[in-house]
Length: 94
Image 1: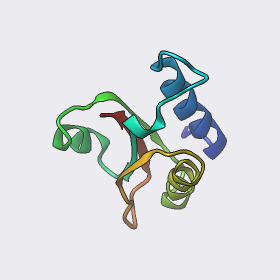
Image 2 (image 1 turned 120 degrees about the horizontal axis):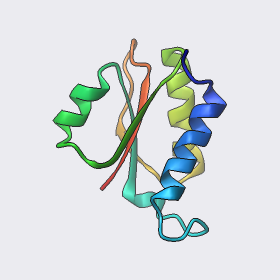
Image 3 (image 1 turned 180 degrees about the vertical axis):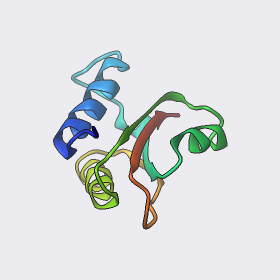
Image 4 (image 1 turned 90 degrees about the horizontal axis):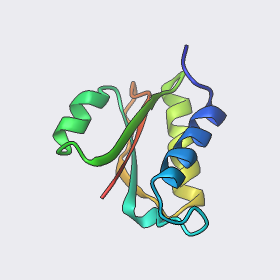
């Protein structure tokens, strides 16, 4: 079963917070968020970046909703804009 939009948002926040030295001063600018249909291939194409994690949304629309939430709320970088059938949301750190 796939995670809900809210579960994925919380998982992303938790993942980034756990990897930060100070959870009250997260450096969002070091993080990237994207959408893909092939997360393993995307990870290889990006050179297996640090902090890579992906989640399967219930639909491409939900994946876009999650990505837009982070792009609008935090100074996180867009790695890849989703295409019609992309439903995996991924993050990594540069």
